[in-house]
Amino acid sequence: MTAVKICGLNDRPGLDAALAGRAEMIGLVFFQPSPRAVTPAEAAALAGAVPRAAEGGPLRVGLFVDASEEAIAAALAALPLDILQLHGEETPDRCAELRARFGLPVMKALGIATADDLRLLDAYAPAVDRFLLDAKPAPGAALPGGNAASFDWSLLVGRAVPRPWLLAGGLTPANVADAVRATGAPGVDVSSGVEASRGVKDPARIAAFIAAARRATTEAAGAARA
Ligand SMILES: O=C(O)c1ccccc1N[C@@H]1O[C@H](COP(=O)(O)O)[C@@H](O)[C@H]1O
Image (spheres, rainbow, N blue to C red):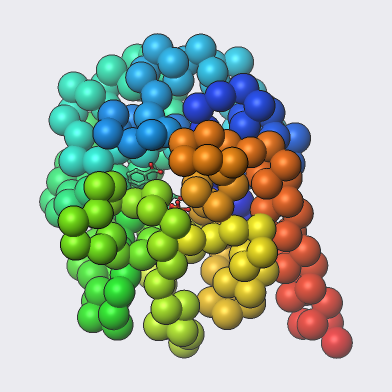
């Protein structure tokens, strides 16, 4: 089944829609310039009562951008997390350092624009547990991700990714099934595509996105059987 991550959750209706759809991962943005940002206290108030993965709940993913160890520690002290998503310029050494320091799996986001960008996969693989492949931000973009921009999915055709991975960047309820079919992505991640306005999640779009991702999985299974 295609794993679904709903990222940038910052209010109860959005979180409830992700939980109702049984999203495999929920993402909390600990990067204050983002319109989706939450403070550690806000994250704890929002998601503290969500069942842990061992109890059937989603994996809690904390999104950080070139964060200090103190900032990550503050988030973890407020709300236990299951995965650290590193969405900045963290090097392989920095990823390995943070993985060891916090004893948590690291999901490294890589910005993809050309086939050359995929070469980084092998350099990062020993230091990380998962990848998130997102569009490379345009020069001057305000944020390093969460920009509703997609990349050329055909770059991934025939390319083995050396860790479990999520496809991200410009996904929506309308294109997620095509994206899964085109790339064979084992998981998908969305933020802007399930928003009513920038930074404000739309529960109906979250439900539609999860349903569309699930349908793509069912179709793929049907095609494999035929
Ligand atoms: O969502 C954000 O605000 C954000 C800020 C800084 C780095 C990454 C961010 N989001 C991540 O980017 C992907 C793609 O976003 P979108 O669906 O194209 O809007 C998102 O899933 C987050 O993991």
